[in-house]
Image 1 (cartoon, rainbow, N blue to C red):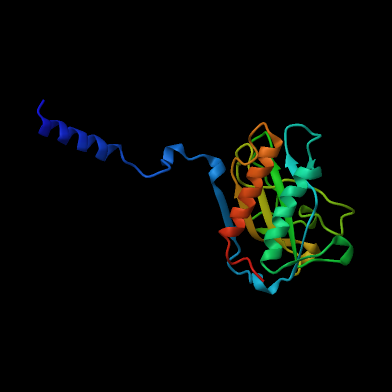
Image 2 (cartoon, rainbow, N blue to C red):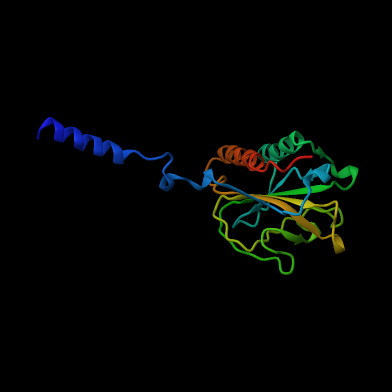
Amino acid sequence: MNLKTFLVILFVSVLFSCRKEPNTEDLKLDQVVATDRDLTANFSSYATYFISDTVSVVASASTDSILTGPMALQLVNAVKTNMNNRGYTFKPRSQGLPDLGFRLTVIKDITRTAVCGGWWDGWYGYYPPWYWGCYYCGGYYYPWCTTYTYTIGTSTLYMFDIKNQGTNHNVRALWGATMFGVFSTTNNQTNADLTTTAINQAFTQSTYLKK
């Protein structure tokens, strides 16, 4: 093989070995954060919000219904920090109704599809008041309702319109974030850190969320 032929082969090999990074085949679900919103919502018309200091959990074990403690607070504080930075004010439950309510959920170790009959319309629509943790229900409840099938380790965050409640205090979802695979490792702190990063990304890509 002469030098000219060798150089041609080398050039072609280098040319076809080049590709953009990351390769789509190498992408992991923990890199994906999907957000959506009610296009009719005027987010600047809301001033206050509330989020519980516990996180709802969907798991095969009946004892896994909520996540509490430092790990839950890390996730809740990530939501608070982003909302405060957008000009909204946290309103404690003791001070009355907020304009907006949040519900953060972790789908821990099962894949499931469920429907809250009559309440669900895609990812948005009207929800029963107890879905986000209402003031009329004697406490906070965490039913999980969806028409979608989520993968193990997915977290979801929904924002509800408490200011403009419907009949029987039904609440409408204004914004939602689905964070794929962020709670799928065996290390709880790693899961919390991945979810925190995903929450921040959800707000980053939702520039319309501001007072």
